[in-house]
Each structure stands twice: as C-alpha cells, then as structure tokens.
Image 1 (spheres, one colour):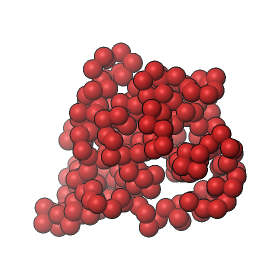
Image 2 (tube, rainbow, N blue to C red; image 1 turned 180 degrees about the vertical axis):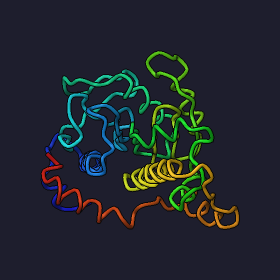
Image 3 (spheres, rainbow, N blue to C red; image 1 turned 90 degrees about the horizontal axis):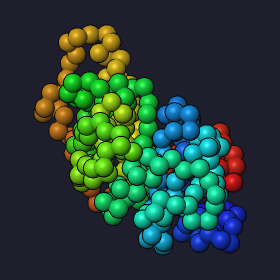
Length: 254
C-alpha cells in the first residue's frame, strides 16, 4: 500500500477499504485500456476484508473509464442495496458477484466481461482448446457454465458457484468470461490470459479447419504454471500495470 494512496482517501474509508477501492478501480481502467468493455454493462467486484457483510461494485451509469476508487458502490451481500449512496445498480451484477464472493471465501476479486472473442469461444463446441501457450497456461484453472439469464433462472446463482468450483476462470457459454482472484493482480492475470487465448483461437479457426493442438507432453508444464498454487499469480506484473493505469488514466483514485 503506497503512502500517496493512504494520504488521499476520505476519512469515511478505512485504509483497507481504500486500498481495495484503488485496486478495483484500476481493474476497470485496465479493462478500458485493453478493450474489454460493453457500454456500462458487465461488472468487477471486490470483497471488503474489514467489512464482511459488504462488497464493492460499479454504478450502472458510469463507463469504465469514468469509474474511480471513490465512486465505487458499497453493496450489502444480503439485500443487494447500496450502503451509503443513491445509485443505479444492475441487479444481474449483484446476483452474479455476491453469489461468487459468498461461495468462494478464498477469493477477493471477480471480473466478468462480454468481449467478442470471449463470447465467440464460449459458443464453440469444445470451448477453449489448447491451441496456444496462452490457452495452455489457463486450462487447468478453467471451468464451463451453460447459459442462463441470472435474473430469470432461480437456480443460476447456485449453479454459477457450483460450476466454478475451486477454479479461477469460468467460460460462460453464449455469454463471456469470468475470472476470480485472491488479489486484483491474480484476477487480472487469469482474465488477460483467457481473453488473449480466445482471440488467438478465433484467429486460428478463421484461418484453418485443422489447427495444431499442443501435444499432451508439452502441455503439462503450461497446465502446472497456471494451476492455482499457494502464491497468487500476477504479483510480478501488477506494479507495471498500476503505472500503466496512472499514465493513461490519471485521477483513478477520484
């Protein structure tokens, strides 16, 4: 936690909440930078470690490049209501994110996107295939979930949690990608590799009907690298990503 972040936040936020807010706001800006947005739809969320009844989500009326640490909405897990602000919240966002954060106490951040490549691969028979190093690096952390409308299917929240299980990436059929992480860096890393693998697969299958898959023996080290371990992924690149955000999106703290 940097001194500048601690020094700038409102007294209504604890130091722990402010750091979580800054990390989550940076995830939104990174999604804008990498082109993972869908107007104001899709959501990223974060658990508040010092407030177990609450989590953070975005307001439904802000584009991702407008979201700041201070504009993130504190939500109640049980009711889906904003704690201290009158804001517009997408019910689907609350249902998906609260369900996963409650089901996975080991993770603290959730990212969900509707990108062209992610949706395209989610609609392909067989889903994500071992066609690239990026894909091989995440297949051991990947699960699949059949499509349902979370606002219409009563069992959708339970099924989302059940299908994700102990894995860190969910290929949501006909819908997109979802990743979770113990840290913001880990959630981003899994999402980045999943999105890139999907883009590569779309490119390959547009060029040939007979792609080369990575042989099983060569695939194993990649699977081992991406399988969740004791240390969260992405820590080595997060400082560089935060500098990228600060260069391209000054004022992310808000």
